[in-house]
Length: 330
Image 1 (tube, helix red, strand yellow):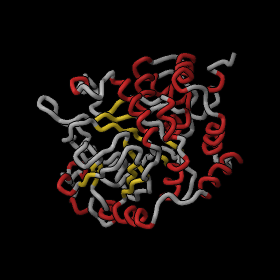
Image 2 (image 1 turned 90 degrees about the vertical axis):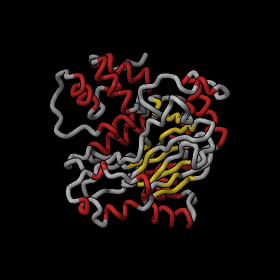
Image 3 (image 1 turned 30 degrees about the vertical axis):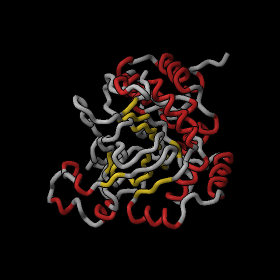
């Protein structure tokens, strides 16, 4: 029987993360822990891991056993790639071959898609996964909520994270994470395939009604606005056909150009995150299985669902592995 602790002992940064959050003693790390990249490599959600560490404060064996029970033992190829990146070494041959195969695929975006991306900083990848695959994830989400698609009375159970459903591991959710078509889409936008896929959560946005108002998230940024802002993406996978009034993603298109042209400086010291941009927002409708991708400089958020059916979604992103941004936060 494989010892569930042993595979984790040498993972770069993992013991330091455990020690920092639980306040256990651990050898000092010479560099910051790349938390997001580390957890995505392991197939763990950021929120679930930090919550587990902060609340349970497990010892090291209990933490590594929890990882194995939650996400399984580390994937050998992903671990080898992460270790090489962490150590500043060349990627393993298997990873080089994977990236080359992605780049050799036929393009998934046409000229109109590329023009929209360049102009708006937003693009839709049609049929990132099939409608049947999207429906399977939606069925799983309904089961998590213990809700009935045919019974609106079951759609409004108590939740502590608004429309966000803090669930990260399931075979149906791994289908888009392993989608070659999706990997190609992000490689086209970045210009390379040296990217890692996120382990992110689900979303359930029910219709507004008397007694239930849309809780957000409203327009916001998730990243640091201190220049220079490197290209990074965010993305949402619709699991149901999502019209403009169906709680669709909303964005302020083209805002990356305004940031580059000195918009923040024009505020004369005002907090950019408090500026109301809602009058400039547009919704992004798309079909089940479609992936909406946007630059992270674009203000974005969900919208109030004014239809008669919930919007179901999964967050899936590909991004370059990176160290924590230690610049002043803006």
